[in-house]
Image (cartoon, rainbow, N blue to C red; front, side, top):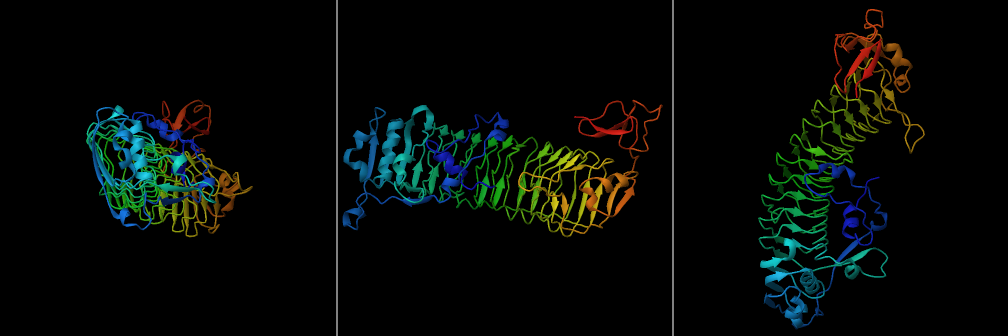
Length: 493
């Protein structure tokens, strides 16, 4: 089941959230450990700008006021502002600020009319915009409503100071009026859900600085106005889970040094091509580009060993792809409902996940490697144009014909049973009797080239000797590739 409002859970952390935070950019394996979330209670969340203080149609409500505050002691902004807190439209602040001062700024924007904040000459405690600086659930949640309803702040523009290194968790979450933000050159981390649901924030407003290292989980979740070109600085090492979820970005540039990309990182985006540099780990929980209905051209890292679940699910224009030679597993639903016409899986692929090529209505030709051992249920379900399959595995890969939902979900269905299925010499009978493969009626034995299992028999002179799949003597098999010993196929782990 696809989870629509993961970021909601993050920004409502004090009540609902169980999302994990990636600890630092040098530990990309954490990206694959972020748990799934149950957000069914929040499907109908509503965001409503809170009425401005005093706006009842009076002439007084049309006035705007500006305040300039020079702080000498952190934590005193509330007393410095006094009655101005609920009447000012804009403010500039110099001097030291702490968490209490940020709460005062939030109060001025939520309960009052504050829209513009200039912190260019402020000095922030710990060099950080505090967690939840501009989002306070207990006060923003509207009580006793049928749906989850949140009032939002009036903040439209904020200038951040040099020296700032981190924007904290949920710092600007649900700031739906925010359109302009100046990011300093010292910024290193954009935290979990920092700008979640900032629906008016644009790519033009986001000038990411060189030196930025981490854009964390759900940082720009559902920022619907991020429509242009997104340039990720060369210093960024990791993009977290659901970071740009449902941001209709039309072009994205990833740096060569990026090390990790979380699941659903660009789900629902709108770019036509993506280049993922070598060395970038893709989180196995997958769906990085799910639902990108414009995606046509993909370059995957040559270092990739595992194609994540659902990575290209519903990428309806993706018609061809070159898979890296080192891939050993095709994840569940990896190419579900794509426009793939022909696919040749790399030599090291050992397994194909459930629904991997399901509903690929343009798929015509499939070539499977000798190393393949298992094919998940419904992996090639409803591929009506499929007219040729080649499987070079001497022993038929096991077809997993069951899943947790359906008692019986065969691997191959929805296309003619008499299409040619090319298999190694001597393997036709094995395939015709193998569960799942017995769907087909037209097996054709073929040299690929090389020798089949039968050609490397377990005769006395060959006993205990090792051969590759082409019948050549080898001293040691390579990991992930099949080899023959005593007339049987094995795969070295």
